[in-house]
Length: 229
Image (tube, rainbow, N blue to C red):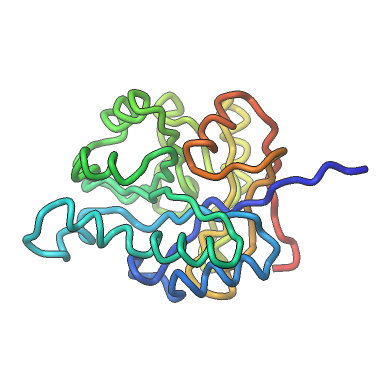
């Protein structure tokens, strides 16, 4: 009997926070439940322009607004039986590259304000101190520069966003050549993006912190690509 694998999408946005998003959190959760996923990671865009647009208010209040999409998704996930986890898609203030970060929580975001003021080198030190994982998102998308491998834990080897040519084949080759961890996600912003990719795990996880441990323990991760999308 074939082992049942646990399917999660590691790259999902909500319209509450990601300005390019077109699907509210509650609807996104329902889409993924219908698509047969067991979990999703909300990775709304974390960058200077978003937080500056929130005006002059305490950082903790800004974090609360940033997490609004995740919280709404989490509550709906509990109601209908889909595991919702927290991540971010981080962009530093002086670059256009994006990094998927896993293993953080609300306390980390409050206690470490304005992460976008880091560069990748300084953020990697912070991430290692707090047991986070950094995956460069769509590193070979036109106009973007692939990071120095030692500053990454892994690479998004398949990005499912249909409106961009992410050159996923090059991302996969880069990960293999440099011994980096691999992840895949739909990069879901619109209804048609749902369920294009993800990862299959050999057992369930219930938080992004558990995903970090899953990778660090060397467990099998199967890249999932939905060829019908």
